Length: 240
Image (cartoon, rainbow, N blue to C red; front, side):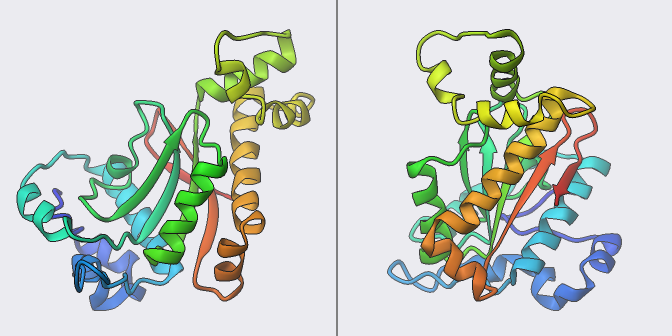
């Protein structure tokens, strides 16, 4: 099922899964249209509704993946003056993990995405998150790790093998090394355990270290979650 003009189209199964969203979800694009260039109309979705939309989109991606470019010119014109994304994704730079596709083929203006190796949150990324939730009104933040992440694997090699890396790579993964150290003695797959724990810790950091985000979380206007994408089956798992 292709999304047209950046608006998720829901089949009968998707509508049943998103019954709580009502008519607002059936016409999701309406909540994304800017009222004006100066003050875009924020999404009407709650954090739980945004999460349900991501879950439905990922199910669509897994069960009936399609690529669609129809309506891009029109949608580009609609969002050129302003944006009102309904979810914020902190993802990895890995070329196999494009959030707009793995969440169901979403269009322009729907997701506010920050990507870097290892889905980390530094000052720049935290600022981007704060801008999205406070200024743009995005109700949901998802820190999305993924299976066989190269940055996580490198940090695990530092811990397990004393590996070193050239250029800025070693510095980049330093914040993951403590997580890898904590996971090194745990049963199961070392790298995957670290992927999961790193996403959890990063999500907790976003929700608590930023006064802007923490205030919105406390008021119930924003949720911050950790998740893991499986490169093999395409499914997104939400972590607790």
